[in-house]
Image (cartoon, rainbow, N blue to C red; front, top):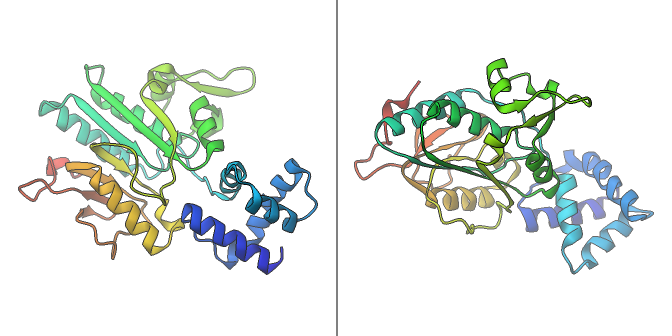
Length: 278
């Protein structure tokens, strides 16, 4: 790929999605753009750039962002967050809370949202509660996969046999496991560009999972995202970020309980149910 073309694609990714592509990503982008060349019947990367920039519908921009987005995920990734989540739900329920709202900001192909749902339903243990999860992603491709809720059995390796039995239908002839309606009915999947706050949701959320997405953004986009998410978090609510990420320098009022786990202080200056530490 010519450097001039790559630089222009990087600019489009930065301006429209806050995705910071560096020189090390050039080969990856070239490979993924090849899929769009084939789909559109275009002969060159320059022809694709011309098509992308001239498309006034915005549809190709969505597809471009789809193919360059990295969507690595797995069930119960960074498991300590789910242990904390279960503890919080149990403690809040015991304290009288019956309404729970959680946001999975970068839901990818659904492993994180469904892991959240399994954890919450397990913590509620069949007791009546009003629980809803909002799952967002910029990629329409991965959202479609998440909505379908179908996974090869090998992808469920981190899901215990008991949870598989309760929340997934056994593999069909193609080896795919289907998420049961008891999970899917808890989740609303919708497209959202995290680089363009303020967001349309009203909140407030009890917990926000904003994990392993900050690393793809520059400092300005990170700050806008975290501040917007913080405004949607209720006092005493919690935010989880990826273990390799940090909120240092982002001007947030969130307080760190431990690395990757943050809370929004209540009027007393404490997290809701601080004894949730594990």
